[in-house]
Length: 260
Image 1 (cartoon, rainbow, N blue to C red):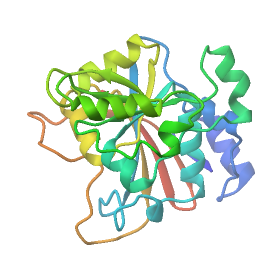
Image 2: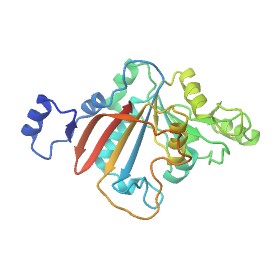
Image 3: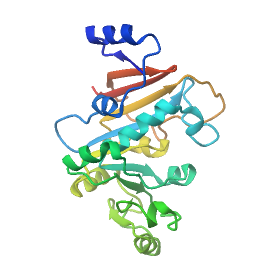
């Protein structure tokens, strides 16, 4: 892996020493590169992958357009987070499992006052979820379900019976994105990560609560009609973010953008 931005004398010297292909970064180096910023909390970052022609999925899943380096970054971003916020459709399509504890991050998480693994926070209005899955029955830390006050009481009861913690973050059937972020912060989850899907990311963008986007640009072309990384209605004015870093490995670009 090579750092392409920001470019410094150290960057140039390191690249020259390592050659054009670079080398595989350690978990500690990746953690430093993706550390949450000091400052106001909560901080919500998104992590998504997109092909050159804008596809966020291939045949309904993101794995075919990913790579081993992308999965390393994926794991590090999870290891740094207090909670991973994900949409119900992504849980169903991607076969989500509980976040696992990683020995390489155990000491750092303990020092930061974090649990052994991040909580998975599923955003769902219908609660049409399979509560017999390990995500709900056997996580290291209880899975959270973010929904609205109008959610079906029977589905709420089913979620709680399975061991999930239901968090009401909206007056209607579903969760309000801004209220969901603040509800998680009130539970002590201030370092937040969302992995989408596109519908949820679009809602977070529209609510103006996304602080950072970690976007992997995959050197692939898929054509077709796959979703973009964010869906839903457009915002009144385009949100402007600033590039803060860019890494490269095997033709994949790992970009990090923050609020401008």
